[in-house]
Length: 395
Image 1 (cartoon, one colour):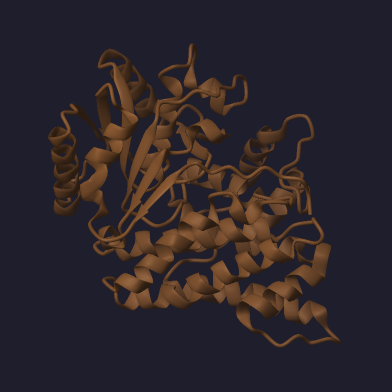
Image 2: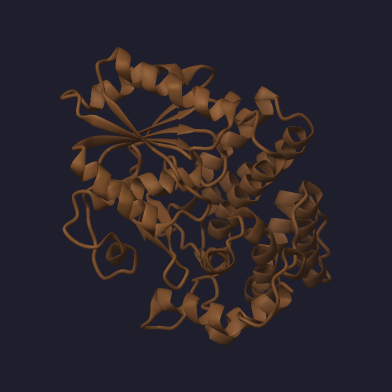
């Protein structure tokens, strides 16, 4: 096990009706009652509108003024972030509330980083600059997926070149996250299953590691995956099953709050490949991960066959063929792919309507993440030709 520091200050407020407490929570952290920016999708969805009004009313009851900011899209856009930074400065915003899922939360984080930053926010996401200052952010979670509600990372898409980049800093962790599983009852099925795939791959990006003697986080990861695998079919069949929704929501948060990666090297090559895929083709992140992650598994499994056999046995309860580890490893990968298909997700690029004409371009964009070494990932360091090979396996 490697040395580590684990510090996650996000306060989790979990359960039915907890969104009604947001005014008092904000007041604790905003005693000067500075203006609050409320970010949400801004759709015509009745439930979203009612939730926004509920949050606004709760803030007003504490004497806090709020300003509405909408227009967030999946694969959140840099142009909207820049607009939000400008408005926040003009309106002297001191606190940000994100109502939604990963795209809204990441937009809030980027705006929170950008307001006090003396420079172009995109420089932070491209590694030209760094910051350890961010406006405080509170979350009302409506989509169990990205884990951004308690993570130290955000991802933004630049429309100029359709580059998708991430930034990691503990300063951007939300100060609190209100998590009421009831708020996910009315989600479209597609968003639900994309979220389930996203959180599973967050776990697996940490699970497939070169670090030895990580028994505890192995078991925590396996238990989280099995919890998702058990409850996902229930949620798909019965979207208003509170207990199953609660398990999925809490699993998604723990999948990406940093706990499962403590003391171990993590990978995230698949996420970097998919980020550029969704940046170029504007597909849902979870839908892209259902395609890319199994392809990555097929490409790298021989690097540590024992870990893939352990995954097959402990996560999918498959019998180990001690005379043919390769067979067991591939069965585990196949079970993963089958599960994504069972949920209703595609597992090939062709099914997403994506051809092979831009593989080289996509691979080059991925390599920009590590210009010096021209590789991505840690479990297996992938060069441009490796990335292209994985994309071909995903066809």
